[in-house]
Image 1 (cartoon, rainbow, N blue to C red):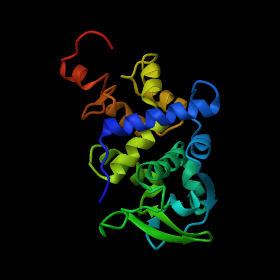
Image 2 (cartoon, rainbow, N blue to C red):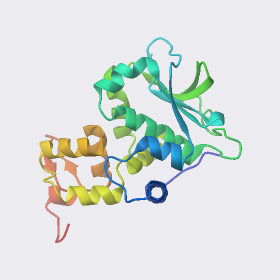
Image 3 (tube, helix red, strand yellow):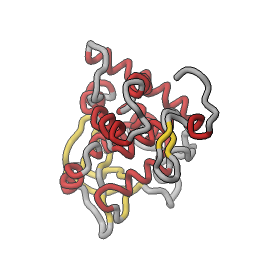
Amino acid sequence: MKKFYRNDEIERIAEKRILDLEKALGSPLSLPVPIDFFGEQVLRLNILWEEIEELPGEIIFGGIIPKKRLILLNESRQDLFSKKPGLERSTKAHEMGHWDLFVDKTLLEHPVLFEDASNSFCLRSCSLGNATILKINSCPEGLELLRAIKSRADEPDEERSVNRYAAAISMPKALVYEEVKKIDRTKWPSLYRLASKFDVTISALVVRLKQLDFLYVGDDKSLFESYAHATGQQGFGF
C-alpha cells in the first residue's frame, strides 16, 4: 500500500530533521543549508558521482540505491548542473526525500515505486548496480524537472511529497520566515538575491514561498506578498 503524506506532516518531519542537523552541526543553522552534510550525517547516506545509463531521449540527473544507502548524481550531466545553479542541490534533496519518506529502512528497499507502471520511475544500470531513478524525457537544461516540481506541488502522490520534503529541507520554514521579513518580496531582483542566499533556483524559491503563502504571482508575473494581498483581503501583521 502506498504511503500518503499531508503537507503539514512533511513539514513536521522536515523540521525534526533540521533540529537533528543543528545538533550534528553543534550550532544554529545558517544559509545555505549544508545539503551534503545533512545527507551524510543525519540520514547516513553517501553521495557519489557516477555515470548512469540513459536510453535515447532521456536525461537523468540522479538516483538512489537503497541497499547501499547511496545517492547517485549522473556524472554525464555535470554540464547541466553547472549551468543551472541550485539544480544539483535540489536533485540531492529530492533523492533524500525518497529515502526519508518512502524507503523501508528494515528491508532497505523501495516498496512502492513499481506498483503503477505509468509512473516516472525505472531502473538504470551503473557500475555499482541498478539505481532507481526519476526519468525525465527530453528536458532541456533541467527546466522540465523544475516544471515538474512546480506542477506537482499540490498533488497527493510521491513526487509531490518528496518535492515538498526537498523544499522544506533546503528552505526551512523558520529561516524563510526570517529572510522574507528583510526584503521586498514584490520585486523580482529581491527574490533572485534570496534564491542565491538559499542556493536554490528561482523556480524552487517561488514555489516554496507560494507553499508558505509568502508570495502570490499574478498572471502577468506581478508579485504580491500573499494571496490575501493580491485580492485585497489582507489584515494586520505579517
